[in-house]
Amino acid sequence: MYNLQSDKEQYFRLGRIIKTYSYQGELIIYLETDEPESYHDLEMVFINIEQSLVPWFISKISIQNDLATIKFEDLEELETAREFVGREVYLPIDKMKQREGHDYRFHEVIGFRVIDKNHGDIGIVADILERPEQKILRIMKGNIEILVPLTDEMIEKVDQKGKVLHLH
Image (cartoon, rainbow, N blue to C red; front, side, top):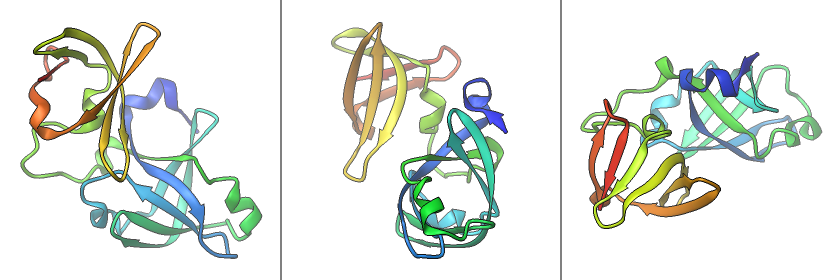
């Protein structure tokens, strides 16, 4: 098992298990990626169980739009499968499919300082919430959580060396 807190820079969140699919323990995963079909050949994923990444081998996978129907090896019962609903699914960074035309990936800006053209220093990127309707930038400024709808137009610059996300 791998610790999500200490090893988190080595993994990226592929998605979240949203429901069971059949009585044989199949699960539906919402894939939080621009190109879900590129993950049709997965053999294994890591599931976040109490902040530990536990490997699970895949015996069958099919992808339609941004949903993957997955059958894990050694998971045969619906009741056991229900325990996985709501859990996050991860892959090692080296399994991330390359995208063309993008200067950065969402997981790369987590921990970056956010500077807005009008408001100055807003805080630190805590997460990118990928919802079906829209991506949301989750920023923490001390104990205050700030949620900002994220569009490509509002990103002015991503300074990867300085770890700064410039917005407008």
